Structure formats: structure tokens, C-alpha cells
Image (cartoon, rainbow, N blue to C red; front, side, top):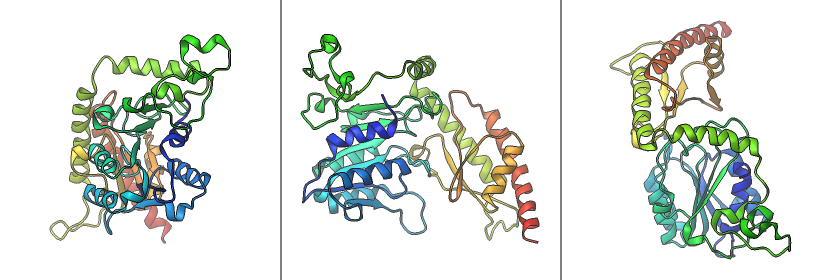
Length: 339
């Protein structure tokens, strides 16, 4: 239903209900901008100030990813003032998989609601939201679920909240199907996430999702995840082997690539976020010249995500070859520009 940020707003109406004592939202510092803006606006909507109610957790100095122990420690220290813990399932910039079960457990122990933006997790890693006791989640479908930009989004509400009387923004599509067309203007609200539907979903957007899910049904997330780990590890190995950062043991002046994503395969999905020793813009331009469609995320990285549903080890090997050519050309161009 809807788009991801619309669903996030609808869910926060129910799960972010601040009080004078408990008014904060805890999130990662580099959350996707739309999430950041949504949380800011929800805080202001309730009459609070994001400067004091929005707790953005930073990685330690010199590090790119958040340590789980630091997240749990912040929940423990400030949890009595936190109304909602809202993290990504996978951090869009670094590719880090957050420990959703541990974060959820810690948040609940302090009386917080806990939700996740799963934009980069759904179709990428295995999820057990109900078993992890997650209160709510939302996601888009145009990344690993392949529906294309603007594809219809999704939402999850834990079964324990299925018959909640939380405040919510309602529309006729949240009415139970068997009485929806009585047209008596007496809301008979559907349980769970169905009750959060507002309007009729666009059929064409549903069709693109259905087509993709039929392909997923021919395999399993466990099988895809197994292949995904191998593909991304292969990419990582080739990058380390061919474009290493110079060290005392291996001094060189060649352009290099540096992976900032977690090195532990269980702490990342498909994606590797890569920084370069030469101009990011030049690397991107040179890759495009060689027919590589890739993703730049300012200020520092290109994200590479071999998708197990359709990418092969040959694809990964070919990309690394083209990246090498692009790094050399980008280095030459950077040197020329500096003259």
C-alpha cells in the first residue's frame, strides 16, 4: 500500500505517541533522508523539537558502521525517555545489517516501541519480524523486489497489535472487506496492517509486484541468501586482491578501492559500499562509459550489490575488470585536471 514514507507516517501516528517524559525517537545518524524528514515532521507535529527529541546515533570516531553494543547502550541509558526506536533493517549507505532481534529486545525492556525501515532488507536477507517481536515495519519494493521506481510499498504490524485501538489515519480501504460496500459510514476496521490501508492500491503497481513475487516463489530466501553471501564475498575478495589500499608491506601509488561495509557476511546484505582514492565523479563517469550502471551516494561511495536472483559470478568478475579500467582512467583524468 502507498509508498514507503507514507506508510511510515501512517505507522508513526500509532507508534509515536510522545509524552513529556517519553518523547524521543532513536535512529541511526545517517538514516535515509526521507526517514529522517518523516521523523522530524512527526516530532514537530506533536509539538516537540527535533533538536531535543531526535537522538541520532553516530558511529565511533574513525569508524563507518555502528556497533551493536553502542546501540544497546544508548537504549539502556536513555530508554526511559525514548518513545520509539526506529532503525533501518539494512543501512542504506554502508550496507550494515542491524541486529534487529537484539535492538527490539532492548527497546521493549525499556518500554519503547520498536520499528524498522526494511527498504534495503526485504528481498535481500531473511526476516522473521514476528518471531523477533518487532512492533512495526515498512518497506518499498523497487529495490530487491524489482518492481521499479515508485513501486507499491508494504507494511507490517505485529500480531499482538492486530486489534489495537491506537490512533490512526483511516480510509475506506481499511474497512473490512465483507462490509466495506455497505456504505453506511460506520467504520468496521480490519485487523492489523489491513486496517492501515487508506485507498484502493493501483492495480498496475500491484501487477509488477506480483510478477516479481512469482519468481521469488520458485526459490527461497535461504537459498538466495546463501548465494548472495558467496557473490558478495567474491566481489570483496577481488577488490582486496586487485585494488588494495597501500600498506607498509605493500606500498604502491596505484588508485585503490576501500570497502566500508561490514566484513562479516552476516552483518551485511548484497551490498558493498566502496570509497576510492580518486575522484568519485570520475570513477562513476568512467564506469558509465563502459556500460556499467551503478549507484553513487554522496559524499563518498559507490554502492555495488550483486543480486543473487539474476547476477552471476561472471558478472562480478566482469565488473571488477571494468572497475580497474575505470580507476586507471579516473586517475589519469584527476592528474590531468590538477595540471
